[in-house]
Image (cartoon, rainbow, N blue to C red; front, side, top):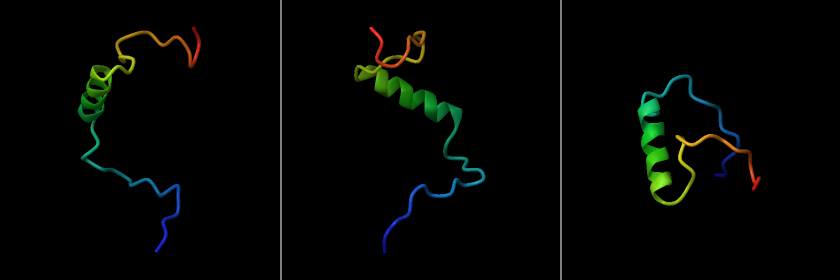
Length: 46
């Protein structure tokens, strides 16, 4: 059986909350990714 992408988006999934998104952002920032608290300066610009 093979998967087909993109898969349909569920109507509402209570597992994915704004709090979860913030938790994931904090974990990524702890591993060196840009924080969501910093202003966005554009992709790949120096």
